[in-house]
Image (cartoon, rainbow, N blue to C red; front, top):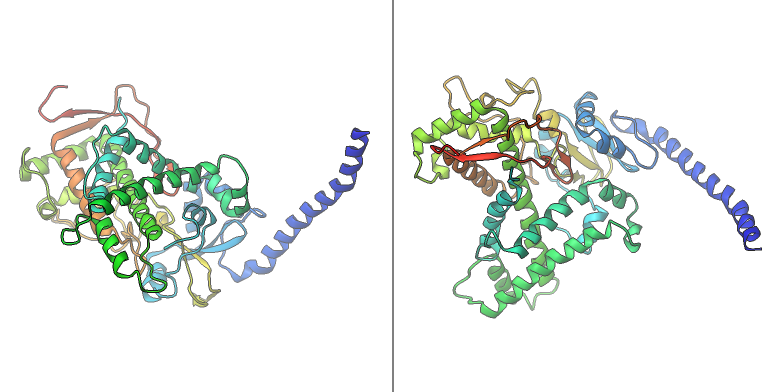
Length: 450
């Protein structure tokens, strides 16, 4: 009887579900044909999923393909079309000349979920992240963590995992179907990690309250706590504890992953191009010797090293489509009408490899940032930190970290691949950032045999 009931139920519901699915697919095709001519050309999207499958399966090939559609192209992240800016000129026109219009940020369900709706032969990964993250810790917590601190190691692990998960297929599926937050599954790991990070920060804030000296502020949290107290009586003040926690989390996420990822790409390029590594070391040895610690004041005296750091950022290209923007009002760009809330992406892959702006666009070569006299020269197509009102707020700190850490490493250490190592896959792993695949390396102290 139960079997008969189930068969009857399926025979009644099955055709309805199938019809509904077919209707949804045909509706998506109709919607694309109806509205497609209003947007710039671009790779053909899949129904419902848009271009997400191409981005996940062949990211580098897709970035290159987008650039073939001209200055502006379309890209569907799910059902909603975004526009992609493929050249420096059109990027400046949008993000600089019309910065106020193009400086919005769209709502991404997976990020809204994390922050509860409030916006605004050894693997070197952990060692580099420890060093870089401790710089942020000095700013926000007023101190550093020991490299062997297990709790701090766990914190870095969950940051890495969430940066990967939110940009992976799992994160993209969540953005398409955010209602799945109510159901169990691997996506719940994103929220668990976020809760652990914010819990860590909240505990630090509680400890700061106990020892706060308003006349001797130690760090960002102290300054925030004082400002919270000053604005207690102000309605709708943005200074409250939850905002402080998410502000610190932003600093951790932005200030730890991007810089440490760039440095890891730098080590890979140095091992892939040992002659460049040696030329950097010779310049460092001549200017600094082995004992003097490098500083930002040494940039002018180390033009080849400084150019190499920039070339690492250009070729490393850790955010291939930049951080997503959205239009704050209806506008026009190059003859295309854009509704308020249109998503806007900058194709950094195309701009950082534009044959009209780089001497050696497809190879790793510091000469891309050197003039005829061997002195460092800027290139206006270098947009590693974006441009316009949404330019990276941590640019100056990141520039300092990259130069000082990279120079200090090459000053005293020599890096090489272990014997019989296969060529490293430079495609990378795509999450919120483009990271190197895990690798192991050998390093020896300069002047030593082992």
